[in-house]
Image 1 (cartoon, rainbow, N blue to C red):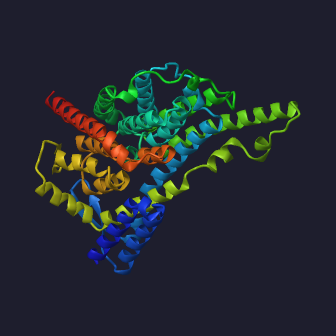
Image 2 (spheres, one colour):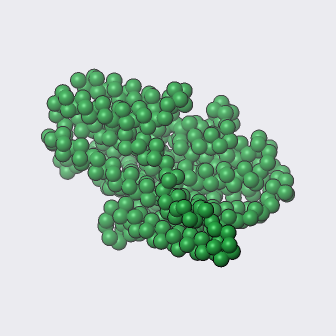
Image 3 (spheres, helix red, strand yellow):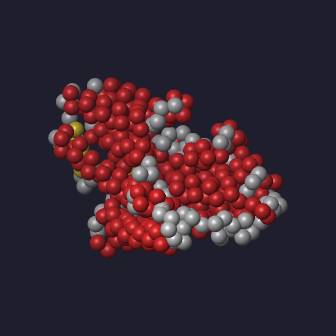
Length: 455
């Protein structure tokens, strides 16, 4: 039966990886794989286990309890993401991200590269790398008219956005998973991964500045200001970003799960959104031209209707599918075999050792395979305490490794769709820059870790 389980998982995984070739949304194989795996476990009466983190062994459990346990952990992540996505959509409803365009005052391509890279790095740490990429590529399309030049900028935005998401507990789905799963704490993650992530972003930019695409100036008329859709855009931008940043502090103070703080933040942002929507509607009535949008639904309802439910369902399917393998003890035993066969390169953990090479390969693998299931699998494989350097290295590798291929990260895929970036163009022009940044950042992480352990 275990062979059937592995075959189902591999077929489902392959279908997810070949999403663009098969032209089937990855949520479909993810949900099917999850349901089939748990059905096989139930019908075959396979024993399920929970990893005892204290004794580092497997303990028998009942399938209903096990499934409910994993559903609860998955729901924490999904509710958190729903809250964050809604806040981002509310900001966009008021055209808040247009405020960022006001910071772009230079015409020099080299300065623009630094500006977009830094914005991508910072924004992705707050609103996640996917949303940051969408926002900045949209602005990029209004600022730079030459498509060939724009492709280069889009490629660098992908690298910077993925690097920025790796050091923040709210910057990427994988870091959020590690944070909510009590593998990392917010402050320790930032302390250990921020510098390597900066190196991962800065080095490719420094190298790219030597390219012809980033020399000279853009056309002046490309920077003309556009009328804002809402007078509350800047207010909602700062309120929304601030409310998301507030969540880690809420968790630290109250010790409640992060999704509770995110729901509080959403409630605050939604309150102001409703007030501003009512104000806009009242003004339109005074002017004698009733706002159809304001009369039909609120800003919150409009924002909720734009939430990417396919992404939420994909996370549900893939996380519970990986949980099925974890419950059978497969990931636990696989981790043991990895530790015994891979060379030890210096990452010390409470349960012996996890090779740095394994984690680097995980990062490189995330360029080909979605990093969400990779990190989910690693969480089930290694019984390592909170804030062990292994988890920080996994957060860095899984977050930044996907930049090496255009299809290796959500940021890359969305940029690919928005700018019609060719896979092989990215592979020839950008991939090696991403690899250089990834390796340099990994080296920085290991050096920093060794210095901290020796102190």
